[in-house]
Length: 303
Ligand code: NAP
Image (tube, rainbow, N blue to C red):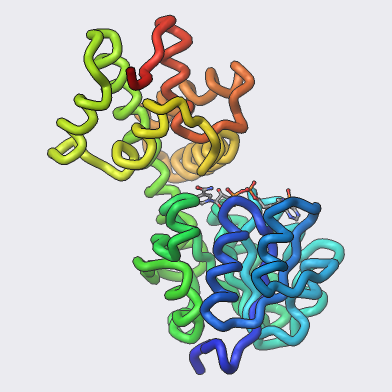
């Protein structure tokens, strides 16, 4: 049966840059939402002010709810909130669905799904693309792995959060698709950075360059969304460099397991290593350009 707001309460674990606006979108769509966040942050209060009911453990988000969404950082974090002490598995009744929307290892995802399956709890891996903007606007791209009946059942919830929702295959297929997305995204980001550096070195007006090239064949989400932030010196995170590096490590791990050579991806990963080494890991991924700026003593900013 589809999980409509009249019939379904939802649990939500992880009210970060992505999770907080996603939880608010569910509340605004009419769902009753129980929320958990590990620490106190202004963002958590925003979700409570919007109507979220805060609870003390990840497991408590699963009592009296049918679907629990997790939006934390990395594989060990999902393992902790799902399987660890106070985790979802200990409180969720059989028939609960856990939808993990974090970006984590496909292999760990399959392991968690198997553990949940033993407790008769279903799981979908449903990582997202579209950044903080997509999370706020409910326009994320959602890449799903899992059982197709469970997917159909959960579709009304996913449709609140995203505008492009695709079931790719079984457990882990959503996460592997997200890694493919990260390859294209990271190399695109690198392309935007090199393009802007050439324009800056030539002394061009960067706003004019961007206006001229973003509507043509070189245009992209990265160019439309990140390049304007670079030009105005806004390096606040949508998506943090540290988290991007976590994803690129997952990509390289998968590439090694599958025997795929990815020289371009390695280059982006190494440039971001330099950004992290400069102490800028908490900045947004648009800070990749700083790997070039630091090297050349030149900044790509608007006049
Ligand atoms: P974030 O702002 O750092 O938020 C992470 C959230 O996870 C916080 O609520 C944090 O709690 C919680 N958390 C982390 N480890 C935990 C643990 N062990 N136990 C309990 N809670 C834990 O990160 P984000 O940008 O929202 O990203 C979340 C996920 O979405 C990541 O997997 C990321 O790769 C993916 N993603 C992000 C973007 C983006 O543009 N930001 C886009 C697509 C996908 P505290 O508040 O207590 O630290």
